[in-house]
Image (cartoon, rainbow, N blue to C red; front, top):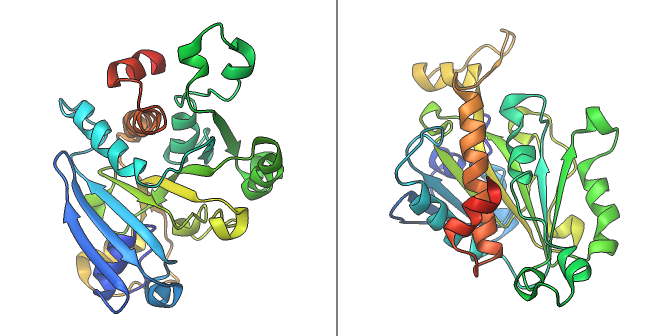
Length: 282
């Protein structure tokens, strides 16, 4: 079976642990699984590059959970491991006009942009001007702009000179039980659209010269994969296929975008409390 998935956890589970790949578990608000792939050659079998892949699994992200603060905090702590000192560019990938693909743009809209504050405020507001410089971009998709996201980012690199890029995107999974319940973090970069066979130019340290931290939530699973999962038999690929998304996808995107944005804001600006972040976002 050739399941479409962006999740390293699902790829590793399907192929079993092999040489150069390790898996550890931890977590409180989430069940957290960290997969480390030592070298590109070790990840070839599962189609993943070398790097760390952290999967956070919990209750449906579309729910208004009493654990929201704890989930944001734990996500933020996991993300902080990847972020170096210095200015950061946060990029929301995807199409805001297509709900299952709107995670990136909606999360980007809630990330605190601070790169301009030091220049505009100077010593007028020492606290705000002392926040880490962060730039935010909602790139749109090739069909809307005629420009690859990688090209847009490359054009900004010299001007902004970030120490890292955080790329947020909707993902595909192969297990319906992880749909809308999972967050994946990785320092291996991202190829937008790869899980739905619409792979765009790669965003990674190899292509951009700085660490690219990928953050995503699975919002779609393809019908052939569902059938294969439930029947254990390969589907005739000549049969029509479709992408399936949860019926509460509007709420899922809204809530998961808020959680991801809150976690990113907390990781980038640790001097701000969760309550500060909430007040800024809403």
